[in-house]
Image (tube, rainbow, N blue to C red):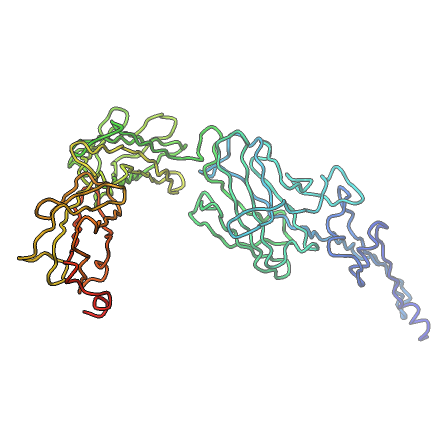
Length: 514
């Protein structure tokens, strides 16, 4: 009876699976010897699931009734392991570009902190679902082949994707990549460089940080230059990194969203002249630019002429607020710059007077422009631009004048006192060979001397019977030659004190007397 009961109660279990997926069944119910990537996305267009069913029969010992049944079918799909950080390339305002032809996007090695890139990252090759291969994995749209770099087409509408391979350590903590967007070779569009750093991996969740290396905000909807995010390995097809490429509009030169040009009404000027400067500002972007602000730094010796600024746009006068800080002028026009399609430029003119100090300067001033785009609130800038005005001295001169005297110093203080006579016909030589002779009172003067460091020396042979007088207060004057620094247009004084040779102090006395 027990034997019959055991036999009738025995359950028969059967397992069914496709021959091509026997290794997957081993993985589910045993220990797999395959690397992690080997069971990710097989090459068949529609991967066959693992099928598992069971049948049973049972005989009731009392009634003798036999019961049979079939279990429901269990299907297990192979796990996807390649990670798909996909994104979309947009215009500056977040919309589609009119033409994506010849744009390329790639993942590159990061060489240093300055953003220099190395070779493209080697990605695991894949194939489209319609081209199964025994040694290839199935890729995802639009980058079916996992090409790096990936060249966009208009049908992609800016979408791109790359599959990273965990078995090759491509999502290990600390890995860094640079996502590089390159515009067409002959265009004037700006590219992007975004550093992507893998911060951590917790199971299927990978955390990353994206940092802009070009200084522009990462997205078109925010001003962040660094964002934190994560993607799910098990849900790679629905999670992406959306990057907005700033200043990418094929029909507009938006690498330079705004432009400033500076000109003057003359090439040269003299002290006392009035110079008129002109600033032309043009919006080169597809959006209006508000809050324009122009900063103009005047050269040394230039003074702004009060109430001289004028501005116009399209022949209509524009009010301008001026903030002046020394030689720095900040012009704030009360206007919004129209889109580039209007082909209008904001023109600003003002006057500056050239003063005597301009001779000492370079005559170079510079100007910069900044504003805010109306579509994404990003700040755009241009400059500095330069204008140089050659300064002529006119009736003025940047040369200096030297004066001095040769006298008998009785108290050895280096200064002529009452009762200390001058020495006539004393000869002084300059560093350029100029010969100077003192008058009857021992005085001399020399005009039109080039500025800078000049050297003068007393010719002791021209003062017979005298020798250099020791100076008890300034050691540097105990020399036959003197150094003077002459400023442009400045005045310098150099005296030479002598004493009768018979009454002169010895060298030991000079060195030991205070």
